[in-house]
Length: 193
Image (cartoon, rainbow, N blue to C red; front, side, top):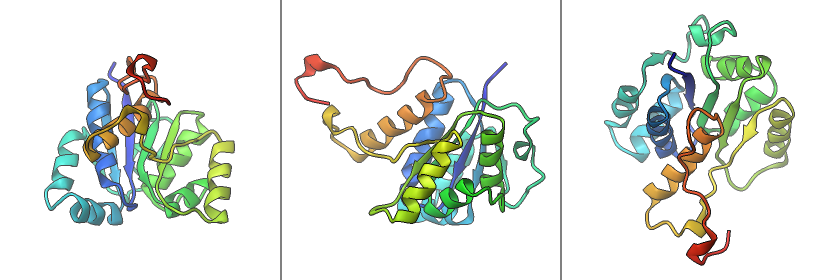
């Protein structure tokens, strides 16, 4: 049976992470259950271009409207291997950290926590306030993995695309769906991790 994974996309900057996560999930053989916030759709268009949403939706197996709290992914009885929120806005992080299931993205994330399934949050903001840090702590204490999209500079990436692809691969690798896709540190390359 094909593993299903929920990909939530919120409105934080870093829309390329959503596309790269979808690509990495497909590469790992997963079926993608996609949910986009309204601001995510706007950010995709602003940061990537007017066809970015269509490209992302084409990588998904199913698109769920963010307002549909009755969707299959809102229930713990719907079998998925986990969820990635990429990028994860501070608004979405706060809602997840405090159990405010006010849209399908935050509800699906809460379901992962209550079912003890992996939830990876590519939390995107800088600098961070104390509220952001406390919300990250709360989400982590409940079982989420908070993974700010920090570049692996030791790999000496040449392009932003290489950076976002590596971050996405690391996020997908945390779900343990297949062999790791992220490029690993190699001490023989002469750079320090």
